[in-house]
Image (cartoon, rainbow, N blue to C red; front, side, top):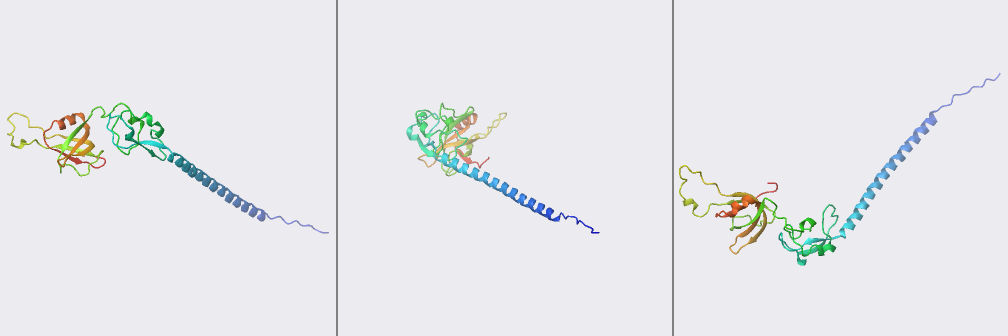
Length: 226
């Protein structure tokens, strides 16, 4: 009698093959994800470069020389510039020059700045509650190189001869101190005496007090955020 015996089949080989296949599948999946990320990044970079080149060819109007608020804008007040990626700004295209020339400046236009549509139209400057005054500033009473846009403290010294005035009479209130205000410099023009005539933007009530004072004006420049 012959006896046939069957040996149980081992599954170790197939398990190893399955594990190896799983690892290969994971590697392929990771490579696909990495390739997808690189493709997205490349698309973004290409889009940004195309958009930048497209905007770099756009031409807009800029201010060639200072224009006061309320003044009529002339041809010589404008120039054409190329601006890259001006998204979000209401700039005026160069081919709309005829829509600007002959109109008034709503606010002061600084040389070198881009022309924005809101800056052209009926004068809207100074705003309600503000005023513009010009004050003489003697040499040595203001920082050198004071530019438009600087924030300053305006101090007015006592008028000439005030030190010789008599003391305060009994029962009367002491005299108020010299006027003081915080203002923004609009322009500073040199005069023949070595000083400057400085145009200031400040609160209307403070402007009246400064303009009606007889003493010498001194300017103290403030730092950013003050």
